[in-house]
Amino acid sequence: MVDAIIWKGSHLELLDQRVLPFEESYVRCHTAQETAHAIRDMVVRGAPAIGVTAAYGIVLALKNDSSESSFLEACEVLGASRPTAVNLFDAIALMRTLLSPFDSGQAAATAEQVAIKYHRDDQNKNREIGRHGAGFLTGQRRVLTHCNTGSLATAGWGTALGIVRQLHAEGRLVEVVADETRPYLQGARLTVWECEKDQIPVKLVTDGMGGYLMTHKMVDCVIVGADRIAANGDAANKIGTFMLALAAKHHGLPFIVAAPTTTIDLNTPDGSKIPIEQRPSSEVTHVRGQTITGKTTEVYNPAFDVTPAALISAIVTENGVHTFPYHFGE
Ligand code: MRU
Image (tube, rainbow, N blue to C red; front, side, top):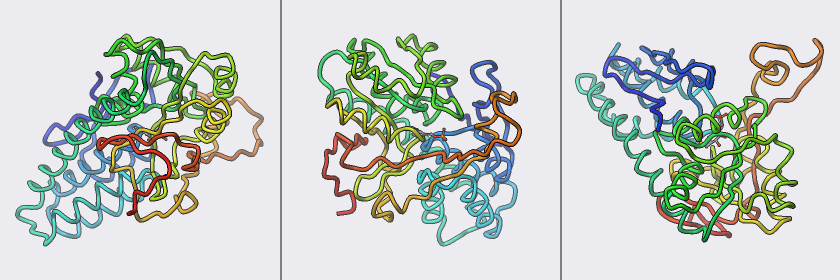
């Protein structure tokens, strides 16, 4: 398993996911501003991973300047980096709670302990998600997945990919089918790379092939992650997830969302209130710096969509398997 987030005590090292699978290099962050930039620019991505990264960003701010204004500025800068994944705000809220009342003599040391624990807790939660999810799925499995939800997107092991890893460890994974995940290609560039590295049987397909694969029994379930799950179970995840859920429903296949409880947002009653990030149009018009459209082509680039709770067969967290209807807020 790859370490995408490495805390060095004086700085943070992030595996640069922008250049995978061609290059394995790390970006160093020494300040909260550099950390926020790395999150916005997708050096690091995936909801749990950006939560952990933001926690370390706050530690960096306090190591540079232990005043309360430095802390508050770091919370603001990091909170503005990406809007959809609630894990980012969960990490910042936890820091605000545990550093209150603010003591500038202790703040950096306390924040560092909190961040290291938050990092370790996510790893443990992933293992539990893997165990619960694999227990829910009986027999041999051909899993269709979307985006990247593995070690690159979490503190390690993964959420949806954690269930895949667990099935593989139990000898029950026939193969995982990863779709490309346009426009940023997290599936083609990251999920395939991760699986190949760990010798997990993987096949790559394009985003429009999900329905065909289900009709022809080439996959028998869909497992995805989430960036924010509303109190009623509506789940925001990488754009394209909703269409896979519709196709799974049509074919009567289990559609599973795997996420730690830090991804559940009890303050958001339903999916219509989840903020959806709009990314730069260049992510659609260019691939690795090369234009693939005309110069004046207009594009939409919402990074996430919302899958209604009724289309989700199960939401798997570190606490167990929840099934529809979901009542996380009660
Ligand atoms: O834009 P990204 O790559 O950060 O989007 C990531 C996803 O949509 C993942 O599925 C989600 O964060 C879960 S990661 C365990």
